[in-house]
Amino acid sequence: MAAFLEAKDERKILHVDLDAFYAQVEMRDNPALKKVPLLIGRDPAFHHGHGVVATANYRARQLGVHSAMGAIEAKKLAPNAVFVAPDFPKYRSISAQIHEIFAEFTTVIEPVALDEAYLDVTAHPLSAPAIAAQLRQRIFQETALTCSVGVSYNKVLAKLGSEHHKPNGVTVIGPAVAERFLAQLPIAEFRGVGKKAQEKLTAMGVATGADLRKISQDDLRAAFGSFGDQLYWQARGTHFGQVKDHRVRQSVGKENTFELPLRDRAAVAAAFKDVAEKVVAVMKDKGFLGRTLTVKVRDDHYQTATRSITQRTYFALEPDFLARQAQPIFDDLYPEDDFAIRLLGLTFSNVSDQASQPISLFENEN
Ligand SMILES: [Mg+2]
Image (cartoon, rainbow, N blue to C red; front, top):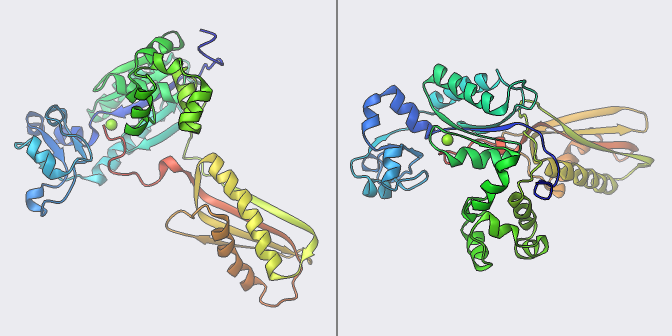
């Protein structure tokens, strides 16, 4: 085991995923829909053949329909299927209800989609499997909806766990069973392995996690770049990614100070670019995106000015682009050429994690 777990990880992580969420909600609210293949999406017969399936119930899935499939194709596979248009305000309010239940167990909650989240319950006195059981019971009591939960010591294994017994199941992957669980796992089920990677791995003789563990880190890196490292550690059940609590609004800022004050616009522009590069590096490292950019300028007289721009969408994390956003603000503050600048700063606020960007309709909807 020591060789398997490279470092001891004693966290308690849950991955909670509502089963066929939109479809389950509609079946709950109209039980007649339980008896038919149900597709959440617009009926192509009334929408010029356009549209896709957001979610299918399990009856429809048995006929081969899946999320993000074109509505026409789905109708061919399931000619008797009933289409129900999605009701996002309803799904969002149920999602909020479920998040209130999460908050009964932990403050460390990372939403992935309306129906899916990671919870770090390390601080909770009960065992992780007991928490999973209580959580499922509470969700069912409050919403009459079922979910699948993966329980483990890291996020990757917790996610693999929730997928393992779907629908309405719990899979506990503790340190004692992680090695065996990963060894038998088909390579396609490892995180991030798409069709291309799967083909490449198959050519390398890798069909399961056990096969993957036989490939050296160097060989994986040569074949896949940094994703090769991820595969190497995934096969060993090691992943130290934290459950990120998006409710904590952070800001990320950098400042440069100048012993010799900047006296011309070209120097200011170059300095903005330098600061932007530093901020961008931190933002990228943390996986953050920001909608508000604050420019800070201090001059030789210790006059400090700050000005903010807020966009509806996230700023592109490109130093040149950000420096170009800052420059007109500076020019506005100092229209004359007689300035002497001691400090320039750029700060992102309204920051959020990339995973909490506006949720795509089809993202991991299972
Ligand atoms: Mg789901």
